[in-house]
Length: 248
Picture 1: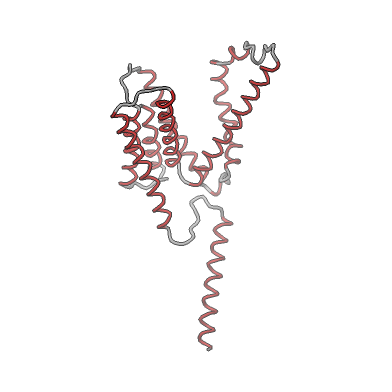
Picture 2: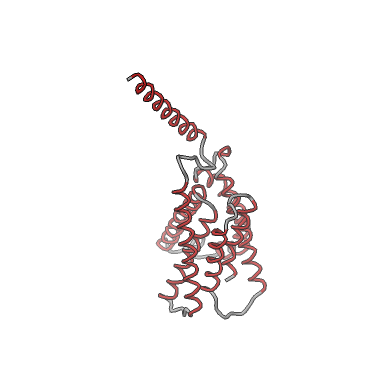
């Protein structure tokens, strides 16, 4: 339930860094999604202060992370519009940040595991390494798609897409694992889907309302030059047409 605040933090930081304009419709979308997700995951449970603080802090830091990522991806002078370039520069830093935590919490268990370093069955080792390799490919695809989505749209759109994924996960848990969903949960599900649908509709209307081929905020200078040259050619063609009409 606390994790539903992530989209609120992303909206707040997007407004602070001027990545989004403050609009009533945008605030309504975020409130519908955050409130709906809170109601959809609501259940009576024992409150834990430490867990609450950790999840809230993760949501706060996640909001900063994705808004700053959007700023990096959409600045043409940095040359990081390509998701591969972004991953090439950011993934090593992310690895260095996670490796100490991995060494503390999982290093001893992994180093003494009979599945990898103390293996006795070669077939089991190959299956484990194959699973790790497959997980690495999936993680690479996930990171690539996230950076690509942020570079083309916004961090808020990425967060909303992630919430749709969480809603699907909860529905599968209810269907496959037998989790009970109350009337309040279903009402929250309806609110969440309403917010997501409204966001998609607003994005579609906004894209249709843009007149003419305008380069995006992070578009390359080559694209801007191409658009200007094509517009100049159209103007020259119109001028030649009117001259020909005048001669006739």
